[in-house]
Length: 478
Image (cartoon, rainbow, N blue to C red; front, side, top):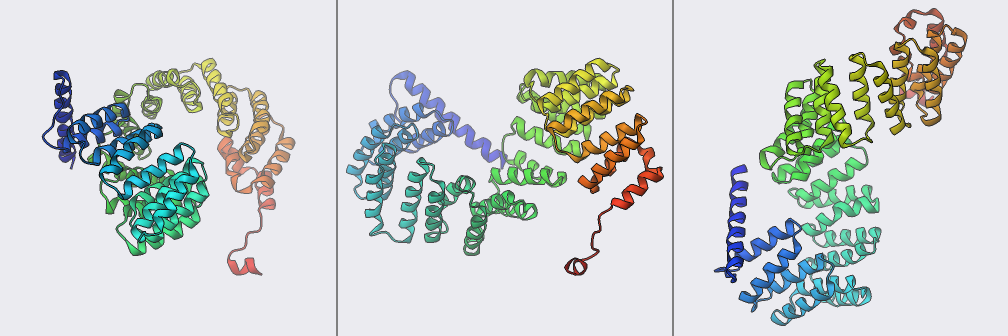
């Protein structure tokens, strides 16, 4: 599979090389239309639209008697927001191929881009009069794109839905649905729509993908994973499906399955730094720190300015207790991105283990400044202060933290600090507040002070304030 992709790349690069040689000699001439289409496809994919137009002009000089390259030029001009020039190209195409649907659809798109929405819609309405279901589907997609220009995503959604009801196999409508559903917030309707499409065409990889995306948004993660899997099983070169499936697997901490998805990507496509970082992340959470470090290093070599790759190397060194190297890589990550609290936390942890307590405190505090709403960093700072025998300052930090974060964990930490300061009465009152706020999180108290698990008063208040939870649904109904 990778060999086929390599062969295709070699072919296009050979074509580009021949084209550049012809340009140098002052005359471009290929034996047939194929290389021109190949070059336009490549330059458009690489967002080199001026070069695509250049190729189209050379193709027109040689094959101007057909509509194809006028249409291709118009399509590229529309992408460049040069609708007036696109319409002129379409006029030439229309003279060569009158009544060709694609030309009329692109003309409607161009008119809308020039602010002539009513004329564009009138043109589409005329086309609908003689359209069969398949043609109607294409017209409705074009109409949807006009409303997309106005950010009228709800209207766009219903037009795309109608297009798919007319022709469930309209791949362009399915592709446009991907972002439309997200903008329109029509995820539940999307589930029902794409389930119906799949009933008619179980091998529609785009329908499976859209279903997976809708389930993902609705937090139905198992269903999302299953739908994404069907998407890449029905099209093994559907890269987005692999990556999005892996993303959901990472979120639900199914690291082995996420790794399998990423391995399928790397088997079929050229790896990028982000992909290597994700593979490293899977290995890291699976405890394969040496392998994880290797992938993080590869990612950093591909993209030296990828802070997650550099940070990841540091995390692997930390798991191997190589705190000097961990600190070094955390600093490098901060040089790339000095607004990520994770990097400062990692550097603080490394400094703490190296006995550089002043630096550790500084970096813990910087983490809280970057993400004050996150209780985690306040608690890290408070724990550090406790370890330095500065329980009073720790308590002050936790009180400050409550101004920014509403986490119940902070209340339990505050109670633990008061216990450590010998203020048992205040500690018990703080514990009572915490138990009322979030009883299920009371284990945080024992993470700070394990000795309290044997304290009779603490056990008594926990038992007293334990909420009554019915054993089963029947009791709940009673």
